[in-house]
Amino acid sequence: MNPATTPPSPRSRPKLTNQASPPVRLQKLLSQAGVSSRRAAEQLIRAGKVRINGRTVTELGTKADPRTDRITVSGRALPTSAELHYVLLNKPVGVVTTLADPEGRPTVRDLLHDVRARVFPVGRLDYHSAGLLLLTNDGELALRLTHPRYGIAKTYRVKIKGLPDDAALTRLREGVRIEGGRTAPADVRLLEVRDRKARLEITVREGRRREIRQMCERVGLPVEKLVRIQLGPLSLGKLPPGAHRHLTLKEIASLRAAVGL
Image (cartoon, rainbow, N blue to C red; front, side, top):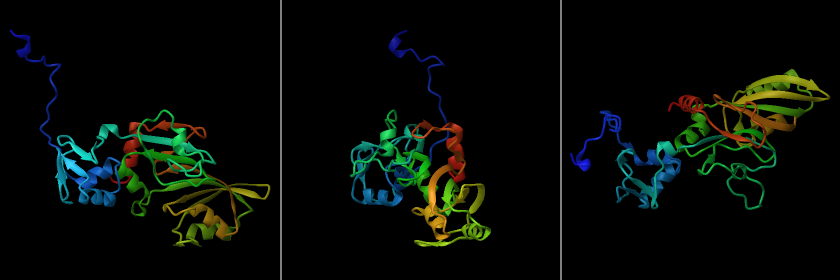
C-alpha cells in the first residue's frame, strides 16, 4: 500500500465531536479575548478594523465561531482561549498599576519578567497601597470582576492611626459620604489595637478610587498601611511582595463562576 494513502492509526486520528460551537457576537468575542471592552469593540467593528476569514465586517450583529473562523483585529489574529493568561501579583508599595508610566516610576509590568503575554491589571491599587493584583488578557472576566453589578468582594488589611470607637466602626459598616457619593455597607472587623494605632479588616463590594482611604479619613482614622488580601474567591496567601504566579485551573474556574461565566 502506498504510504501516502495509508489511513492513520486509531491513536493518531483526531477526536471528532458532534457538538458545534454556537456562533457568538463579535464584540463579545473581542472582549473575552482581552482585545477591548465591548463598547470599544463596537467602535473597532464600525471602523472596519475587524475581519472574519479575510472579509471586513462592519455590522454589530455579526456572529462568528472562534474555533472555525479566523478573526483578525487591525491585522492581528484574535487570541484563542488557549492563549488566555491569569497572573496573581503581590504589588509592593511604590509601584504604579499601569503598564507604562510617563514619570518613569516602576510599573507592575516591570515585575512580570517571565510573562511574555500582554496582560492587563484588573482594577487598580494606588501607588502607596500593596497586595493582591490580578492581571489577565481575559477581557470578559476583567469586566465582570470590576463591574459593580456583580458585587465582587475585595478584602483589605488596614493599619490606621488612632483608636476606632464603636461609633466610627458603625459608620464604616453602614456607609459614609465620600467623593462620588455614599459608600455601600461594608464588612469591618477590628483585628488589633496597639500604641495608639489599630488594624482593621475591611471588605467592600465597590471599586471607587481610593475608597478605603477616603472611608477611614472620613471617620478621623487616616490610613498608614493598606494591603489587599482577597478578590472574590482569590486569596493572596503567602506570596511575597513583588512576586507573582499563574493561577491554577481551580482558581480560574472559581473566579469565572463568581461572575457567572
